[in-house]
Amino acid sequence: MIKFTVLRACDYPRMPWKNGGGSTEEIARDVGDGLDSFGWRLSIADIAESGGFSSFAGYQRVITVLQGAGMTLNVDGHDTQPLLPLQPFAFSGASQVACTLLDGPIRDFNLIYSPQRFQARLQWLSGDQHFFTQASTVLVFSAHAQLQVNLENRQQHVLGLYDCLQLEAGPALMRVMTQGVCCVIELTAV
Image (cartoon, rainbow, N blue to C red; front, top):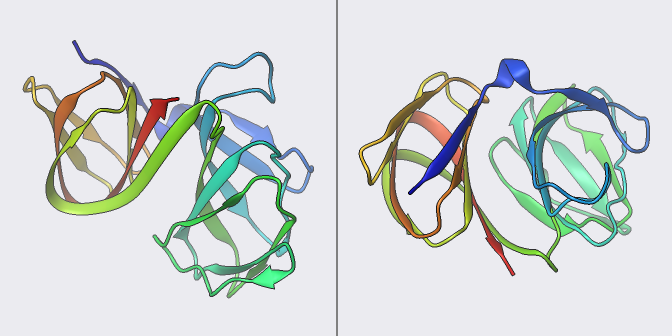
């Protein structure tokens, strides 16, 4: 039996960054032992100016620009290629990271997860996609105004821009149909 929760963008709580430099809208998280203890967390951040990132030692991060021209990251003293919209970039949460915005503010999408507790797979999809997953948690994040998600048991869900469908299922066949783009994240407990 697939258990699902539809998370609406209008309901995401806003919280300050750990370093105080901005704020994040938290989409979902795995329950942990405290505010800073979680197995995984999915969020959207608005970056108005170039600057440093918060440290998340013990975690891995995957960041993707959603809106704006993009940014370049300096990770432990090394500059990345420009990160343009919908190009994910993975790095260690313990790294010293600063961003330089390419042309004004951006909005980004973040997956932070503990590799000691979870394996994670993140992919951006478009069109009509069928795939099988064995992950215990699957998140489908909509980067489009109307995204249709069909499950093998004929359940159908429609998501708006930045809405997210969280599935707790185990093995499942999924179908994602969209005129735009969505991100599918598969999280498997280690």
